[in-house]
Every structure is written in structure tokens, then in C-alpha cells.
Amino acid sequence: MKRRTKVRDVRRRLKWLRLDIAEQTHSFPTTFHDGYWHSKIPIDQSFLLSIEENSRIQQAVIEAMLEGGARLVHLREDKQYRVVVLIDLPSLWQSELLVFESDARLKVFMERDTSEQTWTRLPVDSMCLQRFNLPADVEVHRFHERIQDDDYTYSGEVWLLVQ
Image (cartoon, rainbow, N blue to C red; front, top):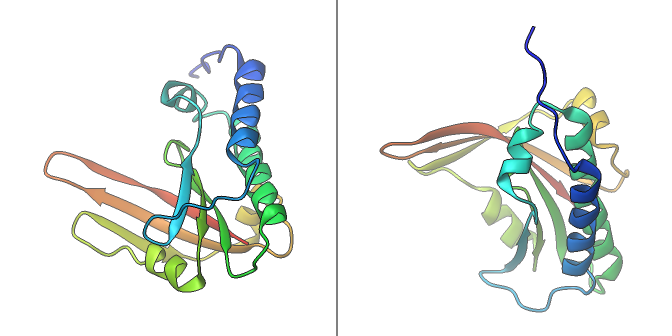
């Protein structure tokens, strides 16, 4: 049986993650490019790769992202803006907070069907929803992501948690 590698400084890193997200979401964004604003997850890739097998720590990282999204929802003055927490599984490395100016821009963002990148819609089951412990007003979109380049192929799952 393979032993799990010990992850060091988890409490400190999660504390800094929460502080960084709070700083990024202390006010509602006012500058949008191509109809949306985004903020990548503010934590190093080596940490995220080291916790890929530890669902408890991954859940804490996801909760920090959800808290940032909830803060943005609370700050928005106009309901036309859509706040999205994008969760990239299994590594979380491409996870980010997004704010879209409209539903139309969000729909364009979700349409990924090129030779380099494809998002295929997946069903959302209750077992998966329990993982995130979401409020009732959150729309959930689940996709299988495939990225293919000449010398690189990646396959994963993307969750869009929309408010």
C-alpha cells in the first residue's frame, strides 16, 4: 500500500489562501475584458499537486474559493452580473473566480469546442453536489475538459458554480 506524502504547512498555506482571496474580492470588479473579469487561484502549483490525493485539504481550498465567490455575490449591485467559481479537478490548478457582465457572455464562455480544447457537458448528480455543500441558489454546470496540442494532452473535469 502506497503511503501518502505528508504535506507541510497546510494551515499556514490555507490561511494565506483565504487572505489572498479576501483581498482579491474586497470590492466588486469594475474592469472587464471580453465581457468578464477573472482571478486565478492564488496558491502555488506544487502545493496543489501535493494535495491532489487528499480530499480533506482539497475541500478546504474549494471552500476558500466558494467564500470568495459568496463575497462577490454579496457585493454586486446589479443581478445581471454572474459570479462564477470555476473548479478544475483533479488538480485545482486552473481554478478561478469569474464575474461575467451578462448571461450571454457566460454562455459564450461555456462553449468550448475547438481542436485544441473541448468541453463536453456531464450530468450533475447529487453525490457530486454533496462534495461542495452549495447554497440552493447556485447553478451547477459540469464538463469533461480535453486539451490537446502537438505534444501535450490533458483530460480533466471542470465545474462552474454560478450565482
